[in-house]
Length: 181
Image 1 (spheres, rainbow, N blue to C red):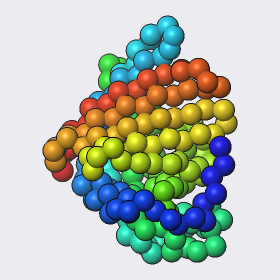
Image 2 (image 1 turned 90 degrees about the vertical axis):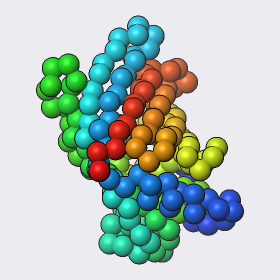
Image 3 (image 1 turned 180 degrees about the vertical axis):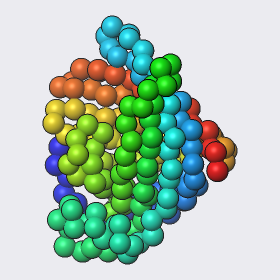
């Protein structure tokens, strides 16, 4: 799916909701994840240390992200987040991945410097069912990623991701994230 990204008409309050959500997510989180492969039900458990940093409009990271997406206005993005992770297999303790990504908000579109399964820049549409619950939908290369992130007080988050490929569900990820700082 290709999204026209120059439109800046925003649902009233959406900018404030996403900015507040990112600011409330700032800090270090321990993410305990369980992935269910469909249809066979194989389960993989991983643990990640995640760090979230808030990005204000006009910062260097958001300007670079805008340029990466070919946006004419490098200050288009109202806010964003820089996220790093270090992931290991919970059972074996073996390191699985380490990396970072940048999120930027322009209107009702979330820009990223990379996708879940691609190093290329991608976009997602997002919405809120309430101020604590962010829903994302990302599509590329025949795959759809539907994610819900829910803040529970100031110390916990839950996440659920459903990954589909060519219309068939492939994996469900469920996460409990505990704030460390």
